[in-house]
Length: 109
Length: 266
Image (cartoon, rainbow over all chains, first blue to last red; front, top):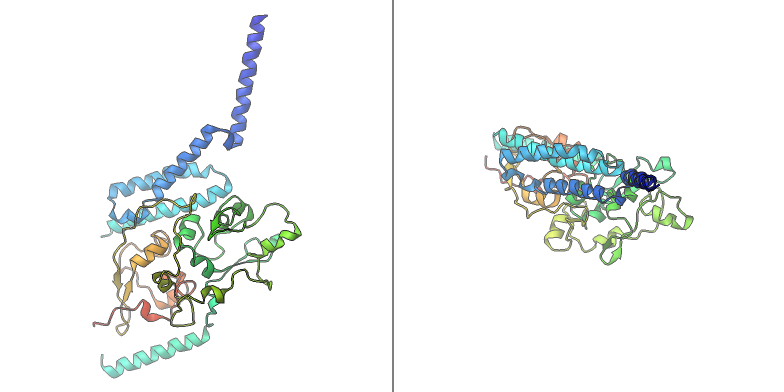
């Protein structure tokens, strides 16, 4: 009898966790994990795009690294909702294109 | 080249230029920089949006809107939708009914719900093309104390800022990227294509402060090598290169000496 109750309890707990998991994927603000992930991409975006005005003073390596990081961030932004995706992709493109421009400009000298 | 020949060339240029100027509409100060936005408005049963650059540029830098908020540099290219604004993007970055400027809440733009008749006035503040509405902020009184340019009585925004009459905001909490202090590139000269025309002194500092780097490069100026591309006045007056802003929003092309400012030394 106790075994059956324990088994039922485990099944219920698993079911509850599964429901929470599914809902939290659909509704991001319910999930601390998702919210943290959102912070992560935004932090990376801010870090990348806060350096454009110093780009002319950067080394080739640093510029290559920034371009690579922009490319790595793009898929993360592509997974956002339509409005956020449209705005942030455009902003990311502006940063990346500028770093590429500076790289080419330095290489042409 | 002899002096008479130079005189003939200069006279011909001014004759041609003034003929072209006559053919062109004289800019009306209030309408200078105006953008009519109509990607979706008419289809949604609304009047197109009348966007006045003069009001917004007095308050914000170009960079804030065209980099941090992400508005395209060409009219109607951003394709702004109401639901995007309601989510806090584009116009909704400020026009959200919560952000405060000069002690007043900035009115909320757009709605994805059916708007009640009494709320229609709020829609009309932007969707105003073809409507004769009372203006909340009048151009004449707004710009009365601001210095004017040599031609067309347009506001001289550069002088207005130098005189501390405007202080364009360059950072929007929750939207802008925190940037370190600006390391401006030096001003440089661009050789004029004509021997009788002074060379251009390009102020990197001024353009950096208002625009940031990524507004101009590489979208407007893609060339990576100095002097590799020769920009013609024909292209510029057609809206390319400097003409993306100058002649549309920034000071018009008639003020030759503001760019062609290096004394002729040839």
